[in-house]
Figure 1: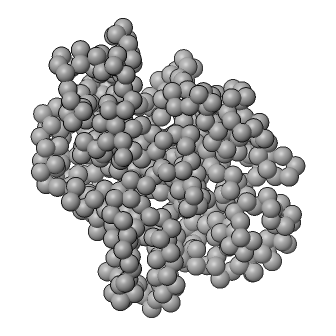
Figure 2: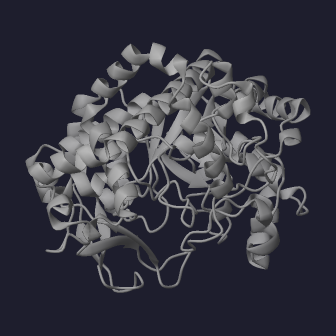
Figure 3: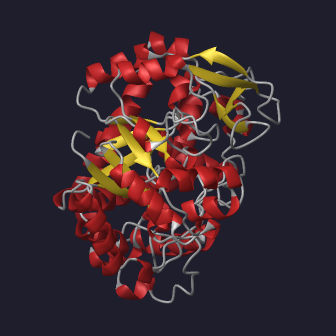
Length: 498
């Protein structure tokens, strides 16, 4: 990220779509065209991995850190590519336009996927499919088996599976693989289709001069193929349940902290194996994206470890992470990797030092910039450095209009007005901060799509520390307009980001 440029934050699930959830189909290509017309260089998305359940659809709490979310497979592209007939996707029913309907979308996809498995086109691609399985064997076999067993035992809580399977005894795994072979094979086919559609979209974006910025959560879910198949790298008790859980202490977002619930890593064990699991995870993310952000970067310096039985994050304690040792290993293997450090929240000098030593760009969020009048607030544009990413807000923030209307205090508004040199209305707030981001000395500016549209709190993507009601916002088709693209292109050119 060496040139002065900008981009837009919009997750795939938030794209307009005919079948209940944004997917990798025509609307994704249309959005790429919008970005190109708007002279943008980056499309930032959230993790592409499969979410845990319909009640917890967070892309940061997934069944696998390596697999793709097959709910993003485009039914339209399955027809266009010859896997399905047009009649196979007709009669899908009505889906809400502005809200994601994961359960209904998945039910429809499950129906058409059954037809996909019998596709003549799929049989003609057997060589490509077999190559995909071989190239991804290190994670794909365990993931497909995990999904098959989860279906067989009716739970992803693998600690409740029969002990020999829970503990991965070779004979038990061999027998289990035979039992769920059909379902596991179907899961592999869906992964093949997902990655085929994803890499076609990424190639299209790259041809337009648009780089994809992805996102990698620091932790993985306990109910995941990763935790089950790599038990030795997590702190688990004798029953193979998390002895400790992840989270953060009380902060801006929550007075009781955030109890994420992920198992924490056994960093000593990872170090003994030269961080091989992290090497493979990084390799996968470098395949998926041109650049990727690591969420909760401070956890590599110190992480908040909470007793496994606790219901809040209050009683956690800080423990030392791997620090620079891990990243020396990763950059030795991937010297040209482009990584963004999510360095928001309670950031201590040792975290800043690691980010600086690694020459990683950090993040500056303008919604955090107006808490005092000292002039030393690191989020205020005059304090930005070139090697950082400036955002009006992120997926964890309210939209800028929502922040201005519902969260900004009278003092914050007064400081904002003084900083701008004039008062602004709630309708003007989003584009005032967009202009501020574009004018920043930061080499990269990323604007959430909701802020480009001036949307309010109803379009917020996520509210940290709340499990339900998140990740459901969807863009409506008529909101992607040439007029908006031209407006964004004009301000992009004005501030030298083309």
